[in-house]
Image (cartoon, rainbow, N blue to C red; front, top):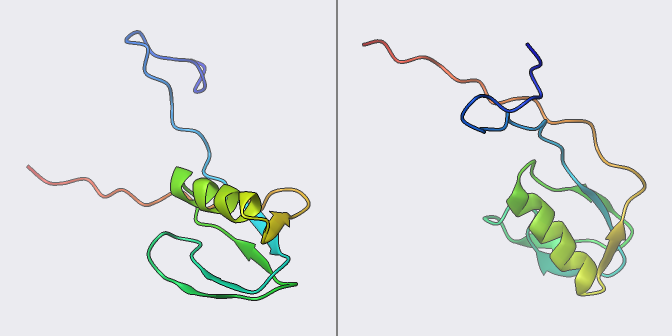
Length: 87
């Protein structure tokens, strides 16, 4: 069975979680996770959280002209651990 193929109901398997790296070109107050605001220093490379929110925040900083995409992407983030509930 191919783990990357959709199942009979059309559900797609989860994609590997990858963080996005940006290089700040200006120092600004900003967030990389959507919750914590801090100073993002010019000349520093940052990784966003591994989620669609992290990608949106990285793209926001790039569109504002205060960051550029850093070469390549970061390593895939570890998969969250899921614990089964006992019935």
